Length: 84
Image (tube, rainbow, N blue to C red):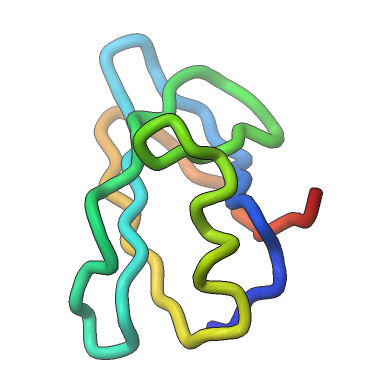
């Protein structure tokens, strides 16, 4: 996928004992750094952060990118890259 946003937002429901972590990957599947900080809670637009940085996805804008979601006791309904 090519994205034009600066931050990744999730519509997700994470139970108290759960979490979601996101990895950004090259098209061949090689990780582009560490997994995200854990996402917790229930929100329509949770911003995903990497090492506390919520605009980490901006440096990959316009480049091919895959995402890997690692979920424990969580439901992911949608995700999107947003500007601003």
